[in-house]
Image 1 (tube, rainbow, N blue to C red):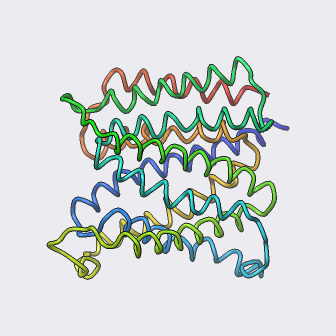
Image 2: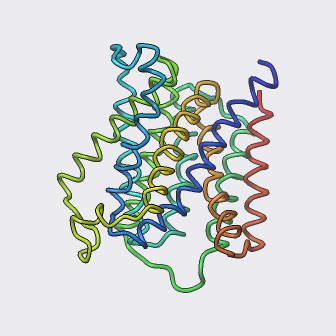
Length: 301
């Protein structure tokens, strides 16, 4: 494998993590300034992104082709549940603790399953990189958290752990799915299943958005809100998952999961640039550790 063919998958997965990191700020804005709840934002994200993923398949006549890739069902359902549990964990234990549990637990789960399934071999470099990435991510998140007593909620911790498990299944399932089918088809199919799953979840759970807006929340969106929702769909759903699925064809599940840990770092950097926040010393140290983990894995043959 040439250096270029090795570099491109890493860049694609890092792009996916970066787009998801930028999406965190957009979601926070939409939740604070609109009457939409997290389920509605997540569903809109999938629905807006689907046409962009469908267009190249439609042009090539592959949109309605029978694919029979069972792994896309697992990934699509995991995507929907991951988003739901993620927001519920934030509501119950706060963003910092939810992020540490959900993101830091995922590469450990993926690494263990990958080794047990024979996808990867245990090595000093792999173990060191996972530990370095987990520690770096924890520093990035907790280093910027506001001081004060942490919220305690067993249910919140449970939701965060379930989010980590769903993301682990997403990473492992995507690796299997793209090995059995075209990455563009996999990206569309997974997002389509995720959208259907979100619809079912919304029908079961019901609306929990702002009572002041009620069912008219969609009618009260202004042009800027619609623009942000469009970015969520085209950027953090269609482009991000296409890049994620494409990179997953060449990288192992553990490498993919570690690379996407760049998400909270991008969110922190954008917080500095857009919101005027401060990047603290522990976060800088965490960023160095995270990039060190990525370099360790990228250099591993």
